[in-house]
Image (cartoon, rainbow, N blue to C red; front, side):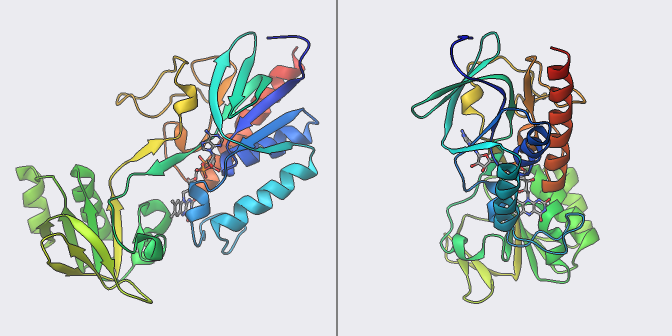
Length: 298
Ligand SMILES: Cc1cc2nc3c(=O)[nH]c(=O)nc-3n(C[C@H](O)[C@H](O)[C@H](O)COP(=O)(O)OP(=O)(O)OC[C@H]3O[C@@H](n4cnc5c(N)ncnc54)[C@H](O)[C@@H]3O)c2cc1C
């Protein structure tokens, strides 16, 4: 690390609930913190968050906007930019589109993106009838005519689970996937209708009314839970060797959320485990407290 450049105590990548909570804690220790965020993250697509302690209802957009105000109160520098690469030297060098910054510690909290089929009118219904996260929005499907769609065994598991929890009026749409015999049996026993086909459009104006398939069929529904997997926003970590889960997907960390690369912490949707706003925020707090304790020992 070059000693003549300004060195941040911590550079936080991503202003989702994880990164913002970490920045709030570090700012309140009067640490030198840079928060780099490109905006429009996953949380901003949440229309109604109603499972966050102390908040009866808040939109994801409002949660993030409030968090950005909070971090500034505690002296955190916020930069709207995209991180392109993180290099490990004595500390870390974080490269953005056209600048580089030095930090002793880095918290990667850049979240993930849902894989979604190309559907006409998806923007109209995303988060308002069309959902991708059962822990977030499953409850909203209670008592509705529900269609679970996906391209893997996860879709069948989701359909069986949602039938138990939310609604009896449920069908399953599989794209490019055939159910193994034991799941065919379980789905039949639960009286879940199974369809195969390629969805091309969501139907309805004020509310969701159905899905149109490429072959012209229409499947009526009032809500959809889709599971097509997701991708991590982790391309800036490509040069670093980090331990991942058995699918080589999510990043593994210890209890304090430090990755296998000392000094690099990972919180939120990028790390192994459940992904919820309040979980990401808790992980951000833990990472920040741990980093501060390490800084105190310098
Ligand atoms: C429709 C929808 C509804 C949801 N509803 C709920 C709910 O009701 N309750 C709940 O608990 N959770 C909900 N979630 C899930 C919640 O949003 C995630 O758990 C949460 O996003 C995880 O937070 P995070 O900090 O990991 O990432 P994110 O919120 O995704 O934030 C990551 C940030 O990093 C930024 N970023 C990414 N790459 C870069 C880069 N290279 N450089 C700079 N910045 C970068 C992004 O722009 C973004 O601002 C919902 C999600 C969706 C999509």
